[in-house]
Length: 176
Image (cartoon, rainbow, N blue to C red; front, side, top):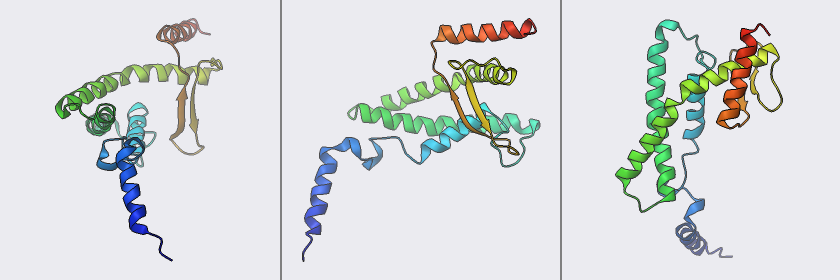
């Protein structure tokens, strides 16, 4: 019984050209599935330094470690964002796409200190029992491990986040 494997392969190859959005050939369609978890883990390592390390992070090496992580994140995120931008506009100039990816990633990375400030107040609010169901951060810690296993924050408008932050900070200053 002949399975006509050559015809099957030819038809599949043809379908790859016709329906390009569901394959990742030549790297133009989607960000790398393998790169994204590493990027997310390094973002968590930057946001929560010392929690995800295999060995304790010493204060004397924090500067160098964070600089290296940010440089690595910049390069890897830029590559993945560039791939995404190319999938949206495959005929776009590669240099323009690379420059746009650089600026998007740079703006994102610049926001990390502000994200840490919000995370810090959310974590403190959780410890203080001030968390409402619509505005919270969940950091799940395994007993005996110094490592956040999950982290999520409800989406808010900028005004409601600032208001919630101000309310928590005011309550803390007043001893509540």
